[in-house]
Amino acid sequence: MERMRACLVAVALASLCCVAHVRSSASDHRYKAGDEVPLYANKVGPFGNPSETYRYFDFPFCSSVPLKEKKEAFGEVLNGDRLVSGPYRIDFLREKDAEIACKRKLSKEEVARFRTAISKDYYFQMYFDDLPFWGFFGKVDNVGKADPSDCKYYLYKHLVFEIFYNKDRVIEINVRIDPRAVVDVTGDEPVDVDFMYTVKWKEIDVPFEKRLDKYKSSSSLRQIQWFSTLNSCVTLLLLTAFLATILMRILKNDFIKYAHDEESADQEEETGWKSIHGDVFRYPKHKSLFAAAIGCGTQLFSITIFIFILAVVGVFYPYNRGGLLTALVVIYALTSGIAGYTAASFYCQLEGTNWVRNLLLTGSLLCGPLFVTFCFLNTVAVAYKVTAALPFGTIVVIFLIWALVSTPLLVLGGIAGKDSKAEFQAPCRTTKCPRDIPPLPWYQKTLPQMAMAGLLPFSAIYIEIYYLFASVWGHRIYTTYVILFIVFIILLIITAFITVALTYFQLAAEDHGWWWRSFLCGGSTGLFMYAYCFYFYSAQSDMSGLMQTSFFFGYMACICYGFFLMLGAIGFCASLFFVRHIYRSIKCE
Image 1 (cartoon, rainbow, N blue to C red):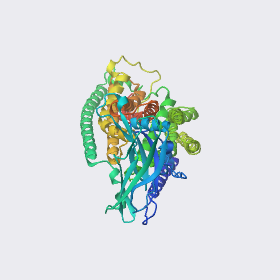
Image 2 (spheres, helix red, strand yellow):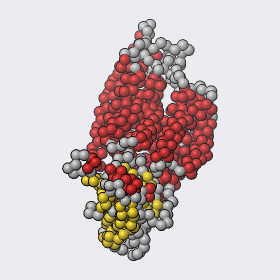
Image 3 (cartoon, rainbow, N blue to C red):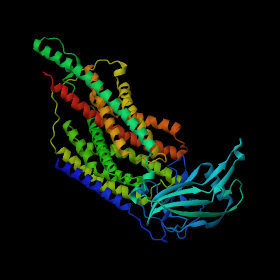
């Protein structure tokens, strides 16, 4: 336990370090009149495919000479950000009117490339004093043209920067396109382009600390999310009241019946869940895999709690998505000891002997699928030459974190778990010969029960899942972490209640194989989440192409698999507590 406390302290300290790092990165920039305000070009890509992004200067825009790459944080690289000095020079409080940034003569190939990009709604992203802004490449004139070949394609060449400031600080930037300044790129002949920009400055009294408020969710969106959360809370209360009433009444009748049977001392054969008291604590099959799954699920639960703590205290402010990825990698590595301790301790409680193999299984149960998925998707990203392809140096850093931090902590946690000498607390003795399980109706078999167990929790959270997907796989900004945390608590409670109820009905049917069943039923919400991915991809998004499709379904498979392990562990722990409680309440011979 002392080692586990030390591990948790280390995670907390690392979390505080993440907070300090993120806070320091958001420094208060001050400028004097005439000072150059940093402008960085980030990436471009089709609006419908958020993962398919390319470097800004992969297209023949104006390029500053020499190009200066901004030093990026670890999480920014993971997020696919590749910032370089922008093509426009903007000085503090200095206005410009239709200034020419550069003159370019586009070749036929470059014209065709711009035309293809415009047809796919390509956008660009830049950062001005760490404030993000976007714009589209051009427009398609298809009004009154039934034949797509008759459409006209126009490239925007004039950006208008409207910048708001408060004393010596930049507060806000709005960028619009001059719709009159366009270049026709419909034909296949070279064209001359004068890229221009206009800069206007306006003073406002908004404090610097609130300059990111415009990127947060709108009030109407928050109202919808709070309404959906209230709906989930009502669902939780109704479910809790229903299950508590039913289970308490049924259990009370069971306890009275079994107590009466004991007092009458009749020789009638026991029935119901009491009749399997000699088998209910019989260890499950594949107990090494089972313990590893519980260990990984516990680690993922710990990661989620730490991430929520950082989110609630304000670390992941709008457009600090690199901070989230950095925190995920660091906290995952530091919580590996929790997975090793839980898996090894539980495995030894189940009288397992090969704890080394169990530890290897624990380390590979989550990392294995993640590694295989990453290798495939990074290969696809390299083939497409997108910014989502991680540089070799970043891959080396991730490997070193896994080899030098995650793996040693996993081993130390496993050794601590093995030496904990914890015993499995079973209120009933297990018989030598297992009891035959009677034939069950179809609705009490594994798959139907998994469907019932996953549907209700998913129905309570699916609205929030939509907003999460729209943020991760779209261009919306997610900032309502308090609502998300409440929904997460609701998910845990509903999962625990549903799994306990199904476990009781399974035991009442004299089926003692509840161990794996409770884990599968608890984790089945992850399967519903992955099924929702297909609906979101086809009906709620404009994603297309091999690269975006493989990224979406590949990484969502890993995320839903993680939810499956975490909720499975929650469901099993709730069922274990319930089963121990009811069998302690009766006298078993």
